[in-house]
Length: 433
Ligand SMILES: [Zn+2]
Image (cartoon, rainbow, N blue to C red; front, side, top):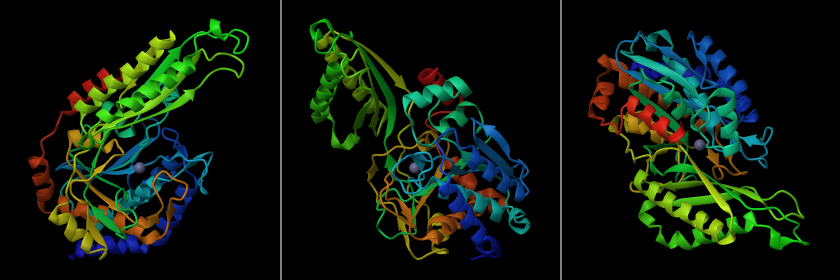
């Protein structure tokens, strides 16, 4: 361990109780995606205290602040602001809870900012570190997406996607991301290095319209949109046998609007869903099959069927950890694992979109138990959940940017983007208008 690494660890340890208090505060005040005003304000104040000048209100609630002189590579350190709808969670705030651990990423990013802005550490960086608090990682209901589009001109459900679309990451060369353990959650690791492959998806909203009628006196005069939707879902069940294991397909619909009144033949039914797979091509193929299911169901009952697809997130490739990451992690804890190779995490994240455009270094952290997105997600080891990941994020940034930013330079040179930032903006335009 060199002096700078030691200094990073010391700075974070000296402020551990402040960071733990911040963690608890954010955890207990969970906020919905694109509505994380309180959390964003806490983050902005913290970054100001570190001597940085955050730009706020980016894609509604996002913010960023840069440390460095603009020369050399610019690395984004990402923390996610949002919680998810999980009304039964003991720490739920107006129905939202940090049951995916995103609050801990905020503490991690802010702890890293604290350490990297220490004058001795900052002087050792030959590049720029840009700290991001990013809104809305969780994909939300179509009704919420419509609302944020109307009120804030947000086109993309994912906060990272929206930042990219708005050009607010144009100057970024690579990113470091982190998350609460996603695979092997009960395996006892403090740090799990690398990123398992994740599925990508599109959002799909099916609106079936029929004809209302008295449900008892004159059902023969109606066209039952709920029956059409149920037929569509039965057909979807029947095509599942065509989904191949290797494609990691997931299609999970729910009925957002199932009818209008108890004694009326439902005349309009809205089914929302996500169509996921581990490649864009399969997502498109499955999407067409799903469309046929609902169109067929509607046709059988004499209803109409309108289908709207929404931009989701891109599939994430598997990213194995580098030797540099391993070495850094082992400075902090013995309980280090690498992601198991070849495992597809069938969940999705907008980190996939980042991965298509820039190199991404990712690790996940322990210190919590219970399933993600469930009422039993809880913190079991606050040091592992909040302090250790902050140290790793800061040390990785230092290792990438020290000595003329040689490691960052190598990483960026070896990376082949799936699309340029401009191509990505055109893709958003195609998908989201
Ligand atoms: Zn998450």
